[in-house]
Amino acid sequence: MTRCAADAGIILQTIAGLDPNDPTTLSAPVPPMLEEIDQGVHGLRIGVDETYISGNTDPQLAESVLAGIGVLERLGAVLVKIQMPDISDYMEAFGVLCSAEAFAAHEATFPSRRDDYGPCFQGWLDKGASVTGAEYAKANNVRSACRGLLNDIFQDVDIICCPAMTSPPFPITLEEMYGPRFLLDDPDWGRFTVPYDFSGSPSISVPCGKNSEGLPLTIQFVGRHLSEALLCRIGHTFEQTTDREALRPDID
Image (cartoon, rainbow, N blue to C red; front, side, top):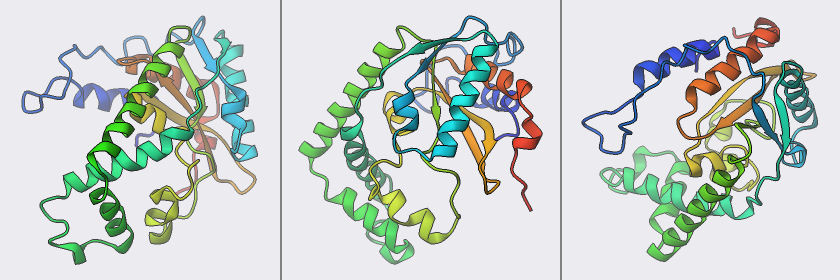
């Protein structure tokens, strides 16, 4: 969403903080996002689960992420072996929660204006409409459990490092944007994002390489709640150490 981690910090500095019109926003003061951005990563504890990173992940992507972790280790970061929790239940719970909440958000116009929606999103909202209260409650319990498990992991590390997706970028077509990948027919597609959606953990993704076809690959850093300034610092340090410009994809 921005050209570099520092720019992400600038944007976040502007949009973060308490909104008197939104009772769900936090009252915690917004820290200066760029004040410590040049302090590097020496001594930071990076949680690494190689099985989580590499299992069912595109091999070139996994290799690039592991190489990126090695860069941070050479800069003085401390690698800590962690074991990510089994997320097999998370994806099903995500489908229940996300579709039901989407249906609630579109209640004013769906199904009354059903024909204004594309066929795939119609199906997604229909799925949400069919979710029972009991199903939602069970899925919400899974979300709460996920938060607790990740809180335990963050007792021993400052950040978790992993890919952002399981594959390199794919064509942006209507079929890809609204097809099976996004309707959770592939239960593995969101394992690097759904747990952090559930836990509310902030994250930042930066380029870490290109695959054999020249497609960009990304490394993701996930932090504790309210660790956005630290994440900007880590992303910035990684960018300064790698050839950031060469890693950016060509955009016509």
